[in-house]
Image (tube, rainbow, N blue to C red; front, side, top):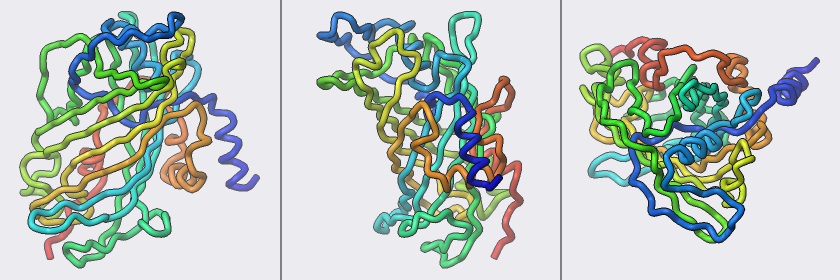
Length: 320
């Protein structure tokens, strides 16, 4: 059997659903209750239990025998003080999610994800990158997170710990998300802003480190079909939207703690099959490890970000 046949068969037999490509925000303002003109729809925006179950159907599927596929595609922009912003490379990847029901009515989201940096013109996955700021050609390290799990409950989730580095623990707040109806569509806004000690401290990682602290913001926008979201018998809700992340320089760029940052700007979405994931992305994920074509079946951890995985899997670059 050819490699393409194996991949096709894997896709046909994985029993997939649709899963969010990214994590929930730590906090969003509560929306005013919007009354849908559709009497048969259930859109109880001011009910935190409804919000919990809606987020479970968005980020996973309530058919616990199935998985869900999230995707994102866009580019990375370099932002340096005193210089014009520049497009660095493309960025594309996907996640596979499974939900496990918990005794208290919450859901444990189990997720694996991969992300690849690509050539802006050809779309080919980059193995090396010509850094326009330093003139250095550096190896590219893709994202491969296994796992990144969290609990979807009727309260806002705690911010990710990133292996214990982020110790922020705000009080529990009922999960009332920032919804907005526009005709036959429902929009959702969800943002998160974090500031915590860097996994790559400059004394050990002088070329890769952004400095002692890591400053990250993520802005998610979702668009849903109102009838699909409001149908209580619909176990999985598909969506399209955008994902923007402000993050330190990619560590593999070897920026030597230069001021500035990277900005991911991506479209995102989720569907019930792998059909929206390009074949070359699936092959690239399988080349890293075939496990990235399916979600975890058990809850294990810790759940680490790509920076924490970088610290565990890479070695500090030599000084020039």
